[in-house]
Image 1: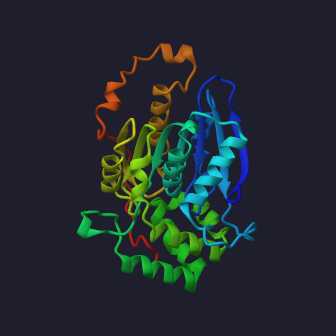
Image 2: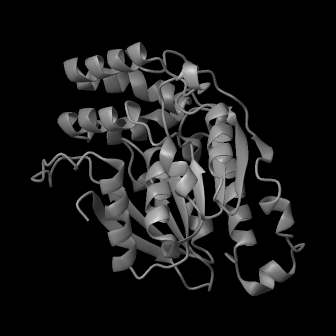
Length: 307
């Protein structure tokens, strides 16, 4: 588990589902603090950190900075914890890590929640694909990171979060990254193309995007849903907010989405579930590209790349 660190479990006494929470680039498991108390009430919640500090960076082989390597580490973690049939919540880069891992080991996952995920960030107009960025913008961001990482973090994070009050803990976790590791990961994420991985996903998915997320616009979620032709379901939910971190900026709206997924997949106790209207599978499985909007007051962000 070369990239995984600080694995911990919360809850698990209510007979519900196993929920695995995986944060994205630059963050830590603390990102989920506003969701964990409710999710762990009836479910076993597994959290961990991707270790971006460079402390265990002896392996500098060509495959270290690859989505497939992260997927293999995730699989190893779940096997180590005896996890099967988990509801996997992957934020940002972890969304595509989850897709690749689920294709390799579908037994580990019962449902994927892909939060602010993107298979490709660079626009490909010749293919009709809008990822949100031009190559020149990504190159400028990478140059800014290489030139002065701390200055780049101070410019990038407030715009990525979207809410100044929520930015300090994210800025702190970004600054905890080793600059060299951060740069290589950014190249992996922002220059990569994981679109081919979508068709291999068979697990049902809920693709959650934020309306004002500069990194992964809602059009990316719609594209992902269309390309997930083998998935049992591929619903799209758009949260009416801004920024790339709804865990902080729209915590209740995100929790509503997650609890809805868990209700449909046995993630709460039988007594509570029996009081709720029964969910009909056709509502999600036949409406493969259904879009629902969770509202939250927007906050305007600018200069998204911090360069």
